[in-house]
Image 1 (tube, rainbow, N blue to C red):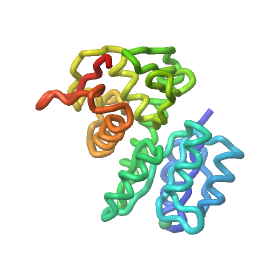
Image 2: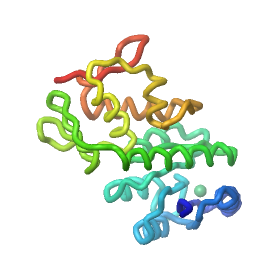
Image 3: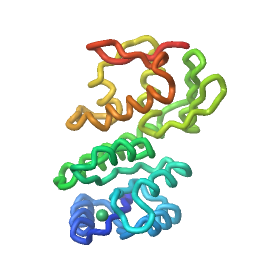
Length: 222
Ligand code: CA
């Protein structure tokens, strides 16, 4: 069965060309033109990936992202403007998994969508529960806690943390973390990955996810 993609984009020229390119790759594609319709369609039809423009009329792309993430782990790729660096940080923090910057090439967008689908398949095949000191992960339920207190992590943050938590104390190079995040040697744009790490450190504590200068990061029991 082909993967189903929802495109939320109000600029018809972009929506049409993205839909055309994805259909050409064998994806099953629907398009909507505003935030409210994106929420309705995503909730009703449960897509495999949402390609979400941040600049939508009505409910904003960021708000769509935040609301969907509160209810599901549906993978989200944001489309952002080149000038709006802050949107990317806010969008990733709102739970988007990746972004592409306009104007983007279709092969670039397609490779991001494919990477996210690959990731999701592997995630679904993974076990279980992990514990490092006071930090506990339940990967099946997509939850994390510290001393029993739930912490809200995005799917990408949980994905990074699951690798670190399988090997406590081991130092991972930034590049290794990026490769794990995308399940590939693709490390073209590392800024999304860096933002996930920054957000993750803020959420679980810098004393727990430690920077090893010039080398990378490690998770320690606290
Ligand atoms: Ca737009």
